[in-house]
Amino acid sequence: MSQILCSTGALLGRPNHRDYRILGDLASELECDGFEFMMYESWYSELENLISSVQSLHLNIPVVHAQKSLGEYLCGMKVWREGDEYPEYVMTEKEDKEWFQKGIELFSINLKIANAFGAEKMVLHLWNGLPSDKNVDKNVERFGILKDMAQKAGVMLMVENVICNTYSPLFNMKKVHEKYPDAGFVYDTKMAEFHGETMKLFEPEWEWLVKEGHLKHLHINDYGGGYMDWGNFNILPIGKGHIDFDGFFRKLFQYGYDGDYTVEATAFDRATGTVDIEMLNTCFKNLRILIKKWGTQND
Image 1 (cartoon, rainbow, N blue to C red):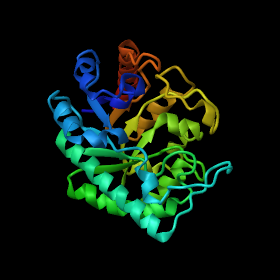
Image 2: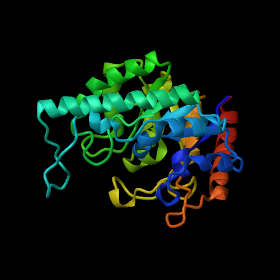
Image 3: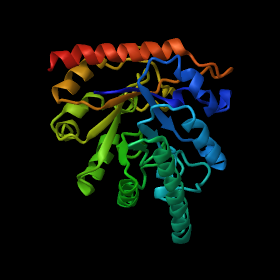
Image 4: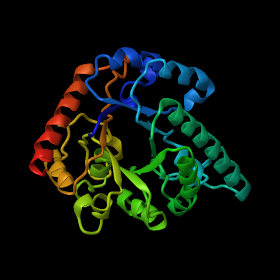
């Protein structure tokens, strides 16, 4: 049976000091089935405390979201020339290898966290942000190393349709699929909508993702901006943007999707850090309504 998860990234931010110790109190009020645990770079220095504290909460954490910038380590993105509209990263071969090795070390730690929390799946940003798919072929080539590491750790590594600036998420996902036919993917509705790709998932060129079972997980969030509107990329609750969720779920269940879902809508107040529990519970409720409505019609 599918689970509705809450991203810990929706709960923990700078205003509440990303204090993972509050997850237990929040969990008791949230009407979700479990959590997708988001890893932050600032936590590496307190890794053992992080693991022991979260383990003591006995939360259901079937998915871990790896540190978002790991994709930048894969392709050697480190320095850039000031004044460029989009930074062009320049590295020597030696720097590239060192940067990549650092990424491998951090990825190993992310796998350790997934194992400690009992997660069987991990979300990966194979590229990340404005310039990060500039060298996507290198990212795809090196993805195989991470994929093998995850498999040995008993974790399914899933590539997310992260927003990009050189190509498009679906284009990049196809590159991954062509090189690694057994790779799994995560589809995020807000990132898809940002690129005008939400319903393209079901077009003949791209339907292999759902038709052949490569779509392993969904992030369900709304988006209210325009096409590649970088200045308006906010993670909105379901119904607060312009995504056609009825149309999306109707098609999704026609293809027989039976995986899990994660809600990521930012819920902490950016001034006080207080978490809007009611907003998140409404998201879970609305998601259950969509699943019941369209899942039942396609049984």
